Image (cartoon, rainbow, N blue to C red; front, side, top):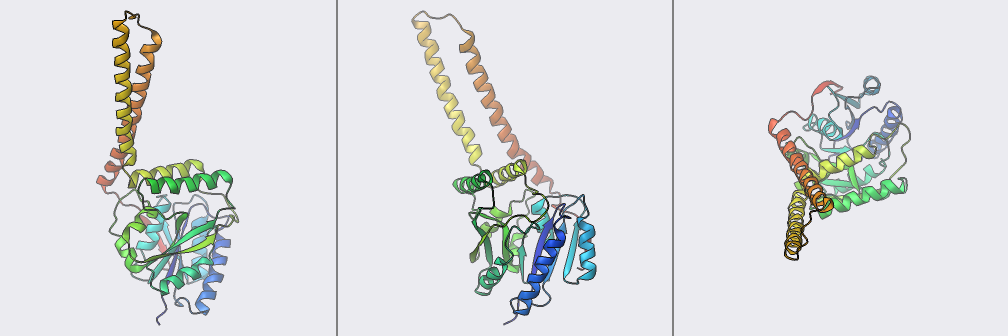
Length: 316
């Protein structure tokens, strides 16, 4: 059986503190699975520099000079994690048989790659890395992350529970992924939409060995909001429901006013004036803001700007 050429794509943003550790761990593991005949000898690692402000690109260039199995892709600026992944994948689509994406922080267990390759040999076109244990996360992060997946599934977004961006894709799947041209990328929702036979590999989440997380709470919330608004119109439907609720409350206020007039209690009060005014004006602003969010996404998509720009490639 012909061994598959595997490309491991690692998006990097300000990872100088951990990049040498990441390379050493991945290189050692790659050499092991090559020796065992799991993947072809010319399989490679591809580090994508997503506009880092530290020495990340210098380290990638240094690694590529001493190791022919290391490729480097430098983006012209910071385009975001999802775009960096696509840059590494699309730039090498015709050169490899299958592709695995993994973050540079080593929190995704690299030993799960063996299981992904085995599933691919068995016929799976997509293999999702699923976290079986989030004990390394704080209670708050674990609760909010699991709540995010539940919320996404309730809104009809086809996400895989406890799966991030650690996955294997066959070249056929990647070519179909290239047909999804939206600027607002949310790969956790797009990849399941493609279909094909898929499987899962469960692994335990590990501690970050060095550096700082690139996803603080503010970025996690923004990422979640982008995923929801990119894949679900449910928030727009909530505006409709809220409008119906407002209408019912308004009718109740009208009835109250009419009854007050009939029984002779017609002295206007500050509270009865200001309360409905603030309630309805506030709810209208919220509704307009939500509609504006969707219109803004349409505006970005219509312009059709590139999702990323590659400045330099080493060891292509």
